[in-house]
Length: 197
Image (cartoon, rainbow, N blue to C red; front, side, top):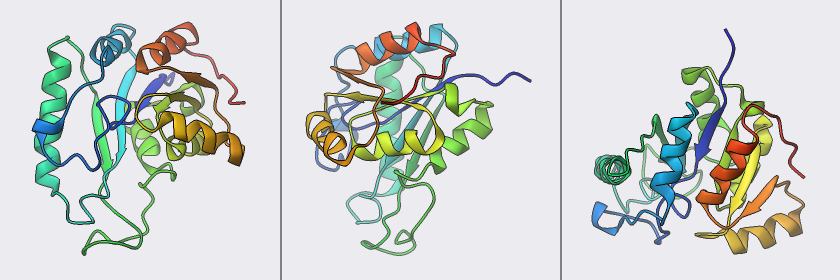
């Protein structure tokens, strides 16, 4: 069976406005244009999966139940624009800080590609023809680890991350102002393997 293309979206700073450890649904604000951008991906039958490091759980700032409420609010906000996320994957772990059982060196915490690999299995995705949209260095590294096309947005921590990627020679296929332009790029290159520079 032919494998699909998918889009893996970072959450904080990419879909919603970055706040330092978002802890409750009232803090969630969807970035302007993000919902319509996700809906365009839906319209083109691209799998849409959030991949989010949430070490605030390990650190005791919030619980996984708090994340359920936050993600319900995110889905609700997107549905207002008829946009749907196929899956929200998150990593609650931290390798050295926090409380048990969350202090663990796992395979799901970006830059490791565990969440992308899970999405590929569940949705029959060709990762080399898939895309990662994010605002952080670890998003770009996770994309690189599986051969996906890395798109760095300049919302959230994106401007600082661009400097770090340049200094560390971490490949990025495109730097774009926001998720809106990232989706423009994806729809122009859907089904292609676009080399990260």
